Length: 368
Ligand code: NAD
Image 1 (tube, rainbow, N blue to C red):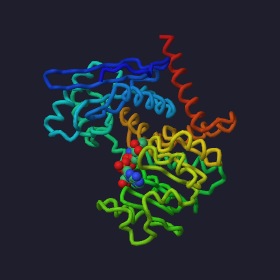
Image 2: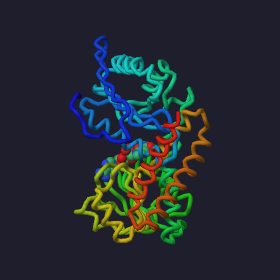
Image 3: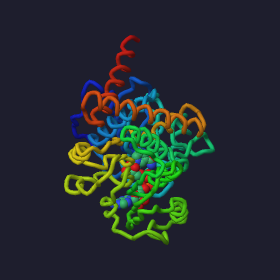
Image 4: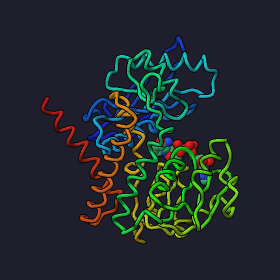
């Protein structure tokens, strides 16, 4: 928890705070990376073993994601050291103790992350008066229920389709991971007439060149089933979805699923990253060199963070959806145009865009 870390540069971090409350046993770290654009929104992760270095890296990744999304917020990350499955009363005591510790740090707005949820955020809100990812009853927008990330991903894909002359009506797509992100991006793409030709969850995959029924798959998942419970399509290994040629391939499961050893198996026009870091950088470059349009994670899956910011500003679910579509589509267009104009990868273009926005926001602050 106290090891030095090397992620210090002209962008941040602005504050690194170690928190220890002997009364409750709370041990936590808060890294506020950069608040030039506004107070930092950042997930609070509960885990038994998370290092300061990892916390700082996660905070930086989120600074760039927020900047790329054009939000009036910086980014932070916090970690509470503990087992998220501890008894609820103990968890509430730790979370409330954490909330008291951050109460007087107005630059930090806490949100949910791995090991914390909307109830934890309600406890924090009770003490600090600021949190996102709240229960609906106190102003929260349930982003996984409304499909915020899938909606943004669909908006990014729609823009990318213009760059490769692809008509979404009749376009084929494959989704790896049929959870919050995978289900909703499938729903929104199907509404536009695209055809799901392959899908996998952790238990296995399904393929059908004539199209799989998205509504039926959603119903199966809603009842706790597996994608292979669908009574049509060919059952394949979960890794088998990598071999299905299609127009749009969507990783929406885990990090690092596409690497140099399997990237050659992918044959797609658009690689739309729902999951975070689903491909290694060299695999991503290989795909791009073969003519695939890459929609990098921090541009394409920003729907969730946009939703959190909209919630914080007290707006409605409808306003969240419109803001997600608007921001993700604009950013995707700017990124792809810049990549084309400068002959660089879409990830490089997105990084440049994000870093420039943070630097610009820092310039404005200097005048105060
Ligand atoms: P989820 O837990 O709801 O769904 C994950 C799905 O992936 C499940 O269907 C699971 O069975 C499947 N899966 C896991 N391992 C698999 C494998 N090896 N092969 C095939 N399927 C596998 O998670 P989610 O919220 O949909 O998030 C998916 C990814 O997107 C994660 O990487 C997450 O960090 C990222 N992400 C999510 C959001 C969001 O708003 N939920 C936002 C940005 C990024």
